[in-house]
Image (cartoon, rainbow, N blue to C red; front, side):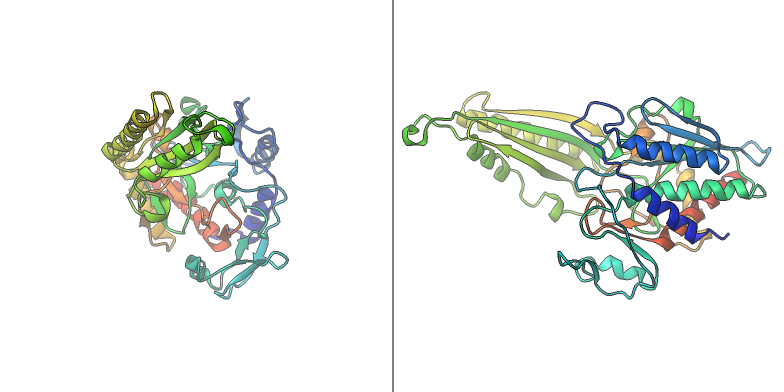
Length: 412
């Protein structure tokens, strides 16, 4: 199997240069009009390479088909990626840098701003010595999350259509908006997709294969104070920012993202806005274990209740919303689909790395919607920021894995 690296690179560069950030504050789907720019490009390309049944609905969900090449009764499988990029860092005017035959040392991303991808700080980059790396120019994210996955799926689609001698069943392709803001599967029509199971191409390091993820919730803590002229504030002013500080410092200090790994959960304060009168704290709550997850939500509720006893009723309010759950519950009864992916990786010379996701994917929600959906590596690292990079060779291998999964499924 020979996957054209030059064409892979060309596709990827084309996609990442299209700004497609999602917006958590929007109520539309897609959440940003600019996501239509890449969606329309993807539809046109799927048609141009000969994919069948190419559709896009009014919410930007793209579906397509690779027809079966065997008359054997085999499962219909799917491959899914998202085309939006994170709102956490700029995705405007992405200017990818191509580092051929990477030497294993620091990479200067931006000389003017002295931004360096440090091999000491990000040691994983040294794994890709002598490979072709695509990086940012230090001013934007790259968008490998998940335009690497999009590139791989379209490239595998083209390869399978060009090689009908490879026996496989019907394959469905799905591209979604708004995954980065937790809405990627909200309007995904599982029945119309019509697959027995699917794989998201949305992981990181080469070899990653994941069927566990966090249980996830958001928590918005509103703290209310009373603003009085500071010269006359004695026994009158209530500073909401100081009460918010009490809340922050009362949560377990070491149960935060920077102090946890593997299956350890956390409380993550990711946004704060405050005045004397009102302060808003925005948290995400994560844990792989469902009982621990529920306990974390109770910790937040109990802390709000305790501080209200100290400062007066209704001084603090908590709004907690579940976001997604651990897909392990839905995939373990269908573990053969993980085994197929594992065997596909081995067949193309990759050592599988089976581990839990410290995050979530569309596959989590889709699994609970009736479409079991493990996650496979797309090859990128350091997502959502200026140090993001991807190996072209990893993308090539991910494409090979898709093709091999298709073939192995027909052998089952």
